[in-house]
Image (cartoon, rainbow, N blue to C red):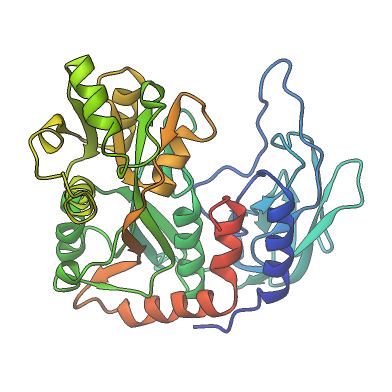
Amino acid sequence: MRTSKKALSLFIALMLAVMAAFGLMAACSGGERDATESSEGAGYVSGTPLGIIFERESVTLAEGDRASLYYDVPTDGNRYTGGIAWVSSDESVATVESGIVTAKKEGETTVTATVNGTNYSASCLVTVTAAKGDDYVAKVLNVGVKSDVKNFGYYDYVTRTYSGMEIDLAYMIADELGYDEVKFVTVDPSEREDDLQSGAVDMVIATYSITEERRELVNFSAPYYTDSVQVLLGREYSSISSLKSVSDFPTYLETSKKTVTVGTVEDTTAFSAFNDYCAEELITWESPLLRDYFVNETFADYEACWEALEAGETDAFIADHSILQSYAGGSSRYRFLSDEFSEQQYGVATALESDIADDVNAVVDMFLADGTIDALLASYGLA
C-alpha cells in the first residue's frame, strides 16, 4: 500500500468545492465511467469554470493499455459543458485524446488538461510499464453499491454508468490496493451480508450503517460519513414543523379523517427508528389518537419511495437526511421536520474472513486522516 500524495491537491479541491455549487466529478484512472463532456440541450448555459482538478496526481499503465483521465471542473453555478484541451509532454510514451490516454512505450509523460479560453490547467503523471504477458490476469475488485441514492451511489440507465461519492471512494481504494479494474454490483439492503459472505462482492460501499448486530456478520471500516434519520412531509402539512408539535397532528388528522402513510425502504431501520424516537420524545405517542394514525408502507428502493411521495400515494418519506436531500433538494413542495434521530454512520464493509479487510480499513483510515474523504464529501455537497 502506497503513502497518499494527495494532501495539497485535495486541499485545493476542498476550497474549490466550497466555491462551486457543483461540477464534473471523475477520477484519474481506468474505469467504466465516460470522461467526455455531454451536451445539456438547446438553451443550456454552461457554468463559468473556477478551475480544473485531477482527482489523482498519477496513474500507471502497461504498454498498450488505455485509460480515461477523470477530472473536476468546479463552476459558479451550472455544469461546465465547454471544451478541454489535452496535451501529452511525450507522445512517444503515451498519447491523449479527449481524456483517453493510450500507453505506447515504457517511460513517463505528463498529461495536461486546460479549460478552453482560460489559464486553468491540471496535470497527471502517466507512468508506462512493460506490456503484460499473454497469461496476465487483471486484478478486479468487485464492489457492492447502491443504484438509487444520488450523490452516494446512483446508476444512470441512459449512460449505463454509476456515479456518487461512494463510487469515487471505491475507485480510490482500488487504486491504493493495486487493483487493475473495478466492477460495480447493485446490492439489495437485505442481501448485503449474503453477498459478502458468498464472495459475490469483495466489499460493500452502499450507505451501509454500522450497527452492533451487523458487526457480528461483517467487518466495517471506520465511518466515512455520519448522518441521521429525518421525516420529509408533503406541503399539505405546512403547519407542522416537528414531531414534537403533537397538538397539530391530531387536530389535522381528526379534521381530515385520514391517516399518515409513511414510506420507507424495505429492510431498513427507518420506521423502527421513527417509532423509537416518538415513543421516547412524545408523551402522547402511545395514545391511539396519535400512534395509530401513522401507517408504514415499504418499497423496494429509494427511487420507488420517492415516486410514491411525489404521486401522493404516501404522505411522508423517512430515511437518512442526505438521502432525502438528494431527492427533495430545495423543492418547496416538501417540508423537512426539524427532528433528527438515530445517528447513522456509514462504513465500508468486507466479509469477516476477508483477506483484504485489514488493507481496506487501513486505506479508509488514511483517507480520513489526510483529508481525502473530507474533500470528496465536499465535492458532492455532503460536507
